[in-house]
Structures are given as C-alpha cells and as structure tokens.
Length: 262
Image (tube, rainbow, N blue to C red; front, side, top):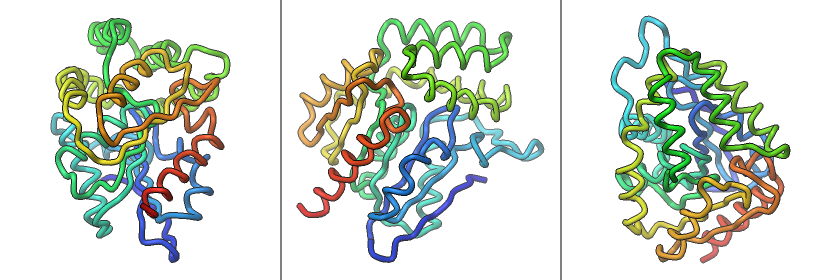
C-alpha cells in the first residue's frame, strides 16, 4: 500500500532514502533527483495517505496512526528492496520519522540529513497545534493547512514552498488529515526524548535562516550532540530543498561523499 520508486545507480553501493513531510509527497524532491541520481541509489516513497499511497476506500489504513507504525511502513519498503543500510534525507515532519527510525533501527541508518528539522515546538507552534485540535473536525482541513503553511512559511520567497505543499495536501481526504493530525499528541514527549539522547549517528541539519519556528532549537541540539553539524542557508525558510535546491544539493552531496571517504 506504500507507493515508492527506485532509481538504481550501477556505480554506487550506497542508498539515499527521501522522506517527505505531512501533506507533501515524494514529488517535493523533484529538484534533488537529477543531482543525487549521479552519486547514489535512490529510494523515493510516499507516506501512507499521501501522493500515490492513497488508501483504497474499502481497505483504508484503519489502524491508529503512530510515529512507530508510519516508521515501520518505511522499514517494510527498505526490507522489501533488500536495502541493508541507507542515508536518510527528510524535510519537516519527515525528520521526526527518520529520527524515530534511527532510534528503533540504528543499524539501518548510515546518516541523517534533516532539512527544516522539527526538534521542539515553541509557544507559537503549540498554539497552532491546539487550534488545529479544536477545529480539525469542523473546519475544512485545507483551510487549516493553508493557515499552518502561511505561519510556518510567511515570506514572499517562501511562496513556492507554500504552494507546493498546499497543492499536494489537496490530495488528502479529510479523514486522512485528521488521522495524521492526531499524531500531534505524541510529538512533545518524542521530541523531548530526541533532544536529550545523542544517538551518535552522523547527522547534518540543513536549515533556512528564516525558519524562525524551528532553527533555535536545532542550534541548541547541534551544540550538545557529538556527531551533529548544522548548515544554515541564507534567505531561506522552512522547506530548504525547494527554496534553495542548488545550495541544498551541493551541501548534502558533499557531506555524504565526505562520510564515504572517512
């Protein structure tokens, strides 16, 4: 039920798995695909209920969504493709799933690239979540999603990212959105744990300098965790891979190649 696409590279034995965020799909990586295919085997996947992993109405994902169950979806795919170990590149909520996968299956994770990483919900973010909880069943989800997208990506130069995510979110069903939104009840204790535990897997955080909600907490974690580093992209907001793809691609590929040589 999870849709995915593999792009093999006969010259490489290393894998890169891309994990999108809530409301997106694997199409958000279209500005990465050409450059990364030159260096690595690529796995693109659509998380449950997103993109081409839309549930059949009679055979929907009926179980309660948890970060563990969605993480296991990813592991099922890499198992099916006999991928023993992979670099994982995520954006936004996808970074939480990658960090959760690394906690539960550390031997499967070669490194983590965390774009627009979410490590803490500040007061403003938590107010947004509470508003969503109050109105998720009475307000059309797309209204809520557009509002959240504007708060997280408010500037003019964030417009492409906002439009892309809203366009992808239109493919969700209202019930699917609510299932995903219920994950917010898990977020605070999970993020608190992630901040406190240094998993010691090579990690590169790639953040926009205008990612006001999430950058400060990432800076604190990088200072505390041994094998973590941070690259801040100027004139860039939350969705770094879309807003500044050239800088993102060059930075990440250079980092991954450096790991291979070390």
